[in-house]
Length: 249
Image (tube, rainbow, N blue to C red; front, side, top):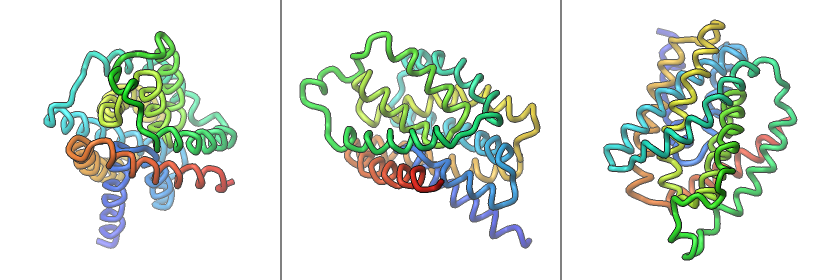
């Protein structure tokens, strides 16, 4: 009985993280410290968080489909590029020093804030969904998969940048594809952590329930409120995340 307050807290944290992950990114910056606070070491917290992200993405994809937002062909093409990188990143996850990565990520996110604050021009808006970067989107997705397999925190911001600037997508469609791609590439990454005993299934499913609830709501908010609502959440999340990464060490 004494564990019930912590279980409820983990569930609530999961809801907040689920909303952030779908509408912006950086939800894992909340869940990972929470899991470590509950006594998990870093690899175990990392693996447990992957379980929650996996179930969250499944709920989000279903929610988007119920709102008539789905483009399975494009999602699968993007996921196929990210998948090999995700496997390699997960294998290396417990071996690489992440200090430099986090500093670079913090600077990158601050630069991204400016690009998100300003809507695309009318000229670009007519070409939403077209690939302006040509073949470049495919190696970029491979790199995104690697970073996601290695370090889940902040990976949503990379995905937003890639799809916004290389495929001219609005933020609603970006979030739709983001959920589908993350769902697919999280499967092998999660398998790596499971095979090495780095998933706490009990805490993972509690967190996953919260993440899934938040992700479900966020998908509906994204579709019904549109890009302006997403942009507000995204900018706030990016600024907080960037500052945290730059001053944490």
